Length: 450
Image (cartoon, rainbow, N blue to C red; front, side, top):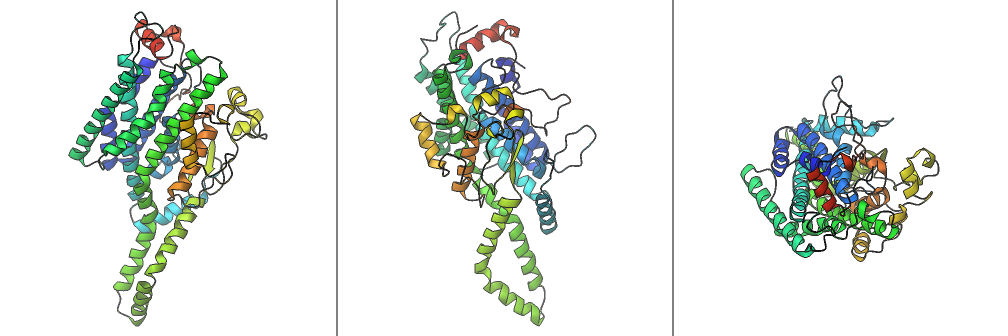
């Protein structure tokens, strides 16, 4: 589709990313569409960087999953009437989850402002987008800028990888300071703390190690051990970034699930306080005495919303939170014959994880996996009762990432993105179409092969 240099040029700059974060305060729908497109571009960049000229990248990275997460909440943020030629913002499936429509209608009636949840989603999503994508771009830029030319070091044996990572961390710290300065001047969101920067550095490190260990497709070839190593490092980066994100978005989730119950309580209270009849006085006493039971009501509301309203779109699937994750399509015997050939090669019939990730050998990856997984590795016990519970949420997402990491559909273009002729995201183009300068840089990064 495009060379590495062209793809990096198309990915949003730090200034453009911050502009989206500011836009979320005023125009949540436009900001959300920009976030979806930005994640899609970064997904392509990392796909090419980590896999080389391999047709469709073999492993989905965090921006790939983040693009589908943005696609999943698209109907909740972009609530416009569809114009001719525009994509339908509703879920792209045969049924539209009628309970979701009922919930939305009730929320609009109770809140009196149908954009309050959309603004909260867009603002929280924009803050995360700014933090993650500026970190990824800083890593990419600092790495590419410091690598020697092919003529100077064809095998990159002279590269001081530890020193290069130190340069990456310096860039990340500088980006952190710049983001905080912009946020302080525009009041976009809360500041990033030093501890958050440390977590982000550890999260993007596995992607850097794919390059350091020369595990791109060009260098790896068909060696199953090296392909497995690459898949495990990418899984580690995905898990660490998602854990960081879920910690940061917890307040956003709590606000979203509290809006409707809080509004109902306020509505009941205001009506009781505004009357002086005997029934109103009795009602006020009952209302005040039942305050302790509202926590139970809130919990019931959160469970009902999690099980029946929310879902996530990933590639060709729509997955609910209130039930266990199903087998990936390529592993499902009933669906397997209709899946792309690369997927059938990566997944065995009846296996929840792809071949490369059925076991995890890397100690750091295994440690992260064990921290979040509660399913015993087979997809059972992955259902979420309450999306606000961090442990349940991470268990679901960790299993989602590991089981779906090698599905080729994840690199398809989300249908909500505006495009006259949507190109396939996985088409990475041929190396013999590159300019000499880009060819040299790409050969540097992806293993020295020309």
